Image 1 (cartoon, rainbow, N blue to C red):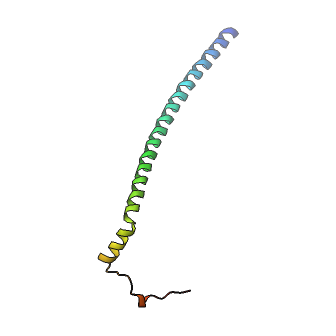
Image 2: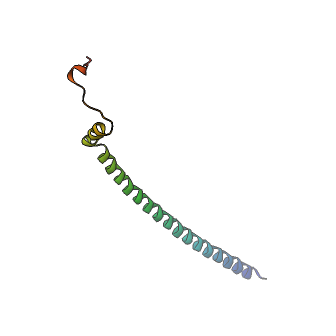
Length: 88
């Protein structure tokens, strides 16, 4: 085998390795992009759920509801004037 033939064989091998590397890199890039999109969808779903939970918490914590539950379910009432002690 001549030096020229050896050089051509080495260059052909390097071109093949380079082509396989490009294919692998492209595949990995697409796989990671797909993963990123999936994580973005998960984030968006969690953001929507967080917003709904905040609305629900606001509804459960309204003054009127807290007062109604205190009166109806816990049998609580406002104290009379003579039962209140003001501390200064």
